[in-house]
Image (cartoon, rainbow over all chains, first blue to last red; front, side, top):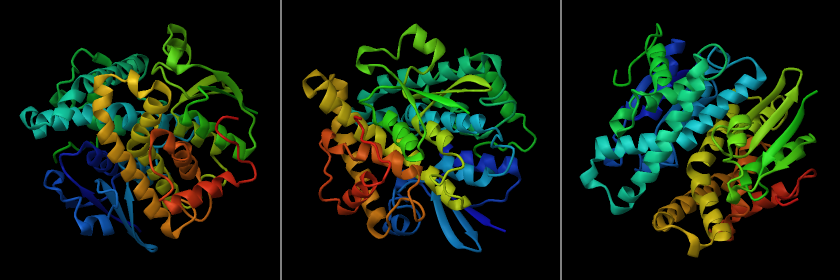
Length: 209
Length: 209
């Protein structure tokens, strides 16, 4: 049986995705914390042993094949969830789930997670000129992503198929804290109902648990 | 048997990934072209019928279940390649392949593909101030991605396991044209050898075919 260690920063929604996936699956997950604001994922030791890309989360997998490290939040969720109901059995739905997970990393996270980090944790006064110049474009792209999600959820309960999948978990992580980046959630009633649906799941675990 | 239509712009490396995947698998793919520089993927018709996100590529799948549309290049590659040798059988390798595909969309494409598009197709003189201000950061992040790839390939022929997978295809698309964005390839000898390895595959098809 594999044992898992999550290398994480508790402020990171990308890390939370993996914790929420493990919680919903009932899988135990040991935690090793880093503070990204102190550069703890850019040390020579971290780069050599955990992730040459200098980023968390990384899922450490200890099993009969030894110790292996898996970076990228959505890939780690996939590893944990293989064979479970969190990955649809239907071929189109499975690919469509990945579609929303790639959408999350391309259209959602770089806008919504970045503005949350800049505004709620770095602080607007400490941003560089270059960061400040990117705010308007990230604001528009993030709002567009939320609008697209709201329209998609207008006539369905989950992003793909008829039950929760990794697509919902991936998109939940930074959506449910999007107001910390000054994004507007309340008017997106379908998104809000979907957020409530996830938070009501029996094995749900909150972000800062 | 399913029939496939690729909604694409031939300048797009994201579209090319799907064409290369189909070529390597020997799957026929009909083509429907759009010019993204003329806004042809933002028309009301496209948004309503093909992709509400206003982007290509989109893989159209026509089979016994009707007509369905799958956006996101890497998700479309996954759909085409399911059950083939382009997706590793080993559980860790399969997740590790997805890890490189998410890396591609997060660390590689927004830097390398964007600078290629801005410099080779829009033209530096036509960039907005905001775009121009992003060039230095995208330059550094893109070079870092190429360096990481070169180090990873130092002792292996393919990104994951011992044969080509979707990770190689996803990363090949914008890497092999990275010099059009003024990125340096020649000094990355492992990357160059890997590019040659892919171009020498029996069913290989070039980007502008």
